[in-house]
Amino acid sequence: MLSSMPTDPGAAEVAPTRAEGVALALIIGCAIVLRATFLAQPVRYDEAVTIMAYAREPLVTAASLYDAPNNHVFNSVLAHLASRVAGDTLWAYRLPVFVAGILTVPATWLAGRRLFGPEAGLLGAALAASNFALVLFSTNSRGYAIQTLLFVLLVAASLTLFETRRWRPWLAFGVVGALGFYTIPTMLMGWGGLMLWFLLESAVTRRGWPERALVVRLAITNGVLTVLTLALYAPVFIVSGWRALTQNPWVTPITAGAVVRGAPRMVAETLGSWTTDLPRTAVGLLAIGLVCSLVWPRDTGDVAARPTLARGVLRRGNGGHARRRAGDAVAGPAPAAR
Image (tube, rainbow, N blue to C red):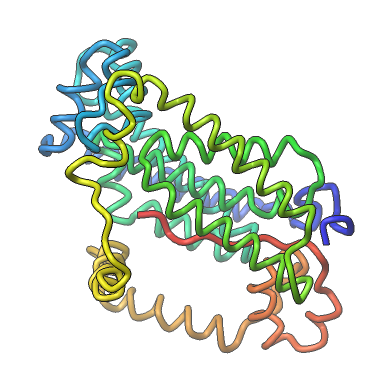
């Protein structure tokens, strides 16, 4: 219950060791080298449209013209500002996503470490540093890298929200979420997943309805997010109209049956993007490791700091020892951003 949660976020965490810090620094260094190597890659069609139609135009155009979903508005605004500072060069337009792509690596480490331990954090950071899709997003002036960073930050912050009764972290959570929506409206899928996990975690903890205080906080946070998102998109509504976001030729409703029929292909494509250019041996080892971690989890030493659903997995292998240590701090993990 919220009333019994500690008010010192992260109190149960063990500080990173020097070896962990060195390993993380090396991983970040590799991420920088990989992304710098592809920073001058050829321009693709969507990126060319982003630069020529939005980022290279006056700032008011970047922030208000939404003649197609190709305008990831927050990225267009940041790319415009970067080009005014660093010059009208390709790398300048790519600078915001380049920085966001690098920052995603330590953010992934933090999220994995807080939710599942130091080893998971380092493994996640290494995979994020080398993943083909994330490297591509980091060197292509589109909003995907920025949205990914913001989403991973929300995942990393989820434990803090369950560990504190202060309003400031909740409001900051809403602000970060609004920036994700401002980048690409598809943030709705990730944000909705987070909200669902919060409610599920609370319901599992209480073995019934979610904590009332949590529902109030979620409602107010979503209110802040809605107001801020509408304010950020106000120039778009004024210049391009609200239908440009909700009723354009590229955004059309689909039936539930279509979603079900398309799910296998979407899952296959997602798994493919996660494992592109990875040796099959590495993919097999990762899959075996995932299965083993679920069947034979080891005591991480701070089970009480894990999400309830994750603690349930840990308790299966740790028995009464983990049950004695399990506390009331709960938070929900999030799906991988696409």
